Image (cartoon, rainbow over all chains, first blue to last red; front, side):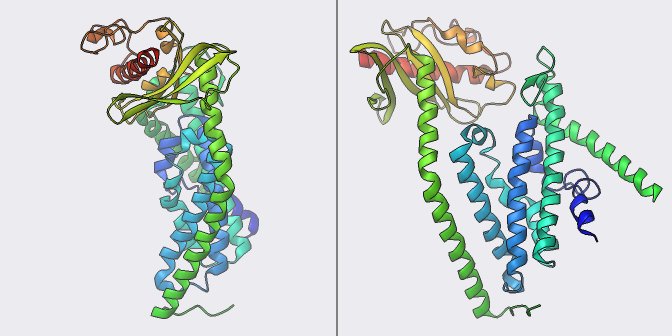
Length: 198
Length: 199
């Protein structure tokens, strides 16, 4: 697979949220607005790139039987670094996302990529894979957050688009499921079409 | 490519130990580096909240903080705001455990005459879209508290600051009576502290 393909597969063909349906807990929980979704996505991307890089560097040093605990320690360290840094420099954002940041540790996208990709490929490819997957995840969360924010609060990235209260259900959990369902359907349809062309 | 380390007991032990040691060292450094800014960010938030809820002051209320015990093992932080040597108001950091999910922290500002100047929610975990309307950024619901002088019955239960459903004068947030009650509770606790300071 070429490097470009490796990077872009995370956006569409193997999008973590829309196609593989991984990491749905932060997806549904944090996407009440576009900016929250984007921030959560970028935090995850950082952890994903760093953990992929480190895992692929040490993959030969780690005995097979303890690889999962080792990966978890590596991932948890990066998550804690992100958490402390956010708390120090973007406290407002941390107030909203704080609860979900520690949950990045158990986000199956990250352990999944470490296990399925980084532990079998070289450092550069692993970083590209992490960046692609992470940015694809961010894109999905931002789209989901933006739609929920427009329908639910009538604004986008905190800029008011129309007046009025919007439909409350889209800010609450059921709205997350409804929007995600439609987005998955659309993405699958598009993926099918592009597959037929080839 | 180097061959893979075998899964012998010794190898596993050594590798896990080294990884944990490196990870904890790295975290210790990050913790040290971010400790200062985290403290500063928290203080900054508190300072902004105090500025919001009391009249102009020129002292440092955080340095003159006093703890007021309103019940056994239950103290609130009070921040006197002064202009020159006159007390222009008192900001009280109060909380309620009666929220819908978790504690509701509110900074309440009192004028010297005992009426509420303004309020500011510091932290809460209420439902987004419903209970979070108590925040000034989401709705102006909490403005109805401004100017009220809290009154208490002889048994120390609140008389006027409670939702209309409970016989008070506060319009609850639609569909969030519990969050509204918690907000009232936090304010009432603050005003108990205020009356103790006055004495």
